[in-house]
Each structure stands twice: as C-alpha cells, then as structure tokens.
Length: 201
Image (cartoon, rainbow, N blue to C red; front, top):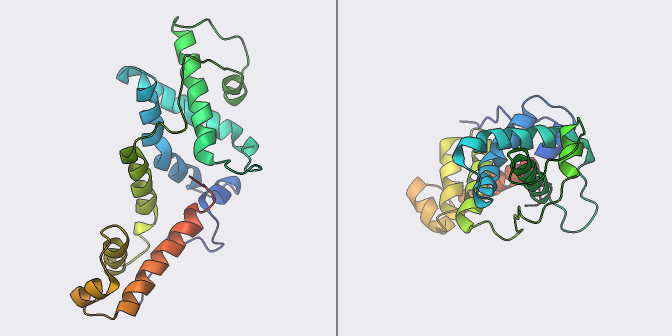
C-alpha cells in the first residue's frame, strides 16, 4: 500500500515560512506548538492560573502583530527566544495593569507596546525550562506531522528514535529489513526538519 501524505505542503515550506506566506492554518499550528511553553513561562513568573489564558492570548496577538519583525540575523536567534521576550513583556504589562508595577504608558499596537517594556522583576531565564517542558515541545512538534504517515512507518520511527531500539530489532518485529526501518526513520525526520527546521529551538 502506497503511503499518503495529505498535509504535505507542495512547496515544502517550513512552518515559519508558511506563516510568512500567510498559508492557511500555519499560524494556528505554530501557536498550538508553543502555547504550553508560554503557559509554563507564565507559571514561572508567578502568574495566577485565572490570568494565564488572558496573558497567553495577549502574547499570541503581540507575536502575530510583530511577526514581520522577527529576524534570525545573529547566531543563536530563535523563534523560541523571540517569543520568550514577548512573553516576559506581556507579563510585566499584566502586573503593571494590576497595580503590582507602575502603569505602562500608551501605544495602541500590542507588539510595539510589549516590546517597549523592560522590567527586571519578571525574569524568564533562557535556561529555566525544565527537560519535561522541552520534551513536550518536541512531542507536540512530532504530532504536527504524525498524520502524514502510515501507522507502521510512524511506529518504526518512534521505536528507533524515541525508544532507542535498533533497526534490526524493530525490523524483526515488523517483518521487514533493517534498511526499511532506517528509511521509515529518515522519512519522518526529513518531514520534521522540513516543517520545523528554521525554528532553531
């Protein structure tokens, strides 16, 4: 049976390139990928659960408004780091609005307003994400492309990459050659890089 890939972009755009091209659904995929991490950052900053959804929404709106300004000109520039800065500023703005910090002054554009706020009391260290949060980001990234592969192909990839089983072991389980297992692994990894390669986590 020939494998089908119903969601594969004909132009093989990465997710960020798809957002820049205004491709339908691209922004929703990107936000779905990063929302748990934004929520984690909110928790790290001491935000009460009742306020998390509002701040997450503001971060997403600001990121969308300022997406055209996102650049990767310097080594180490990442979308995750850029989004972290927006989140830090959104948290600072939230606390100012609620009287814990001085009120922020004017500016109608969400991205411009958030970029203009600096507050040392809202810290989101670049290295503060525990392994479990990073693993969740990768898991969600994998789920973005899972539906494009037959279940057997996906399972062979999963067993070799995630469960760290040998191609020979997986091949014996599925009655195929180790070469077939390596090809399955390669197809999924290639698709993942195509979709997410320029996020540079």
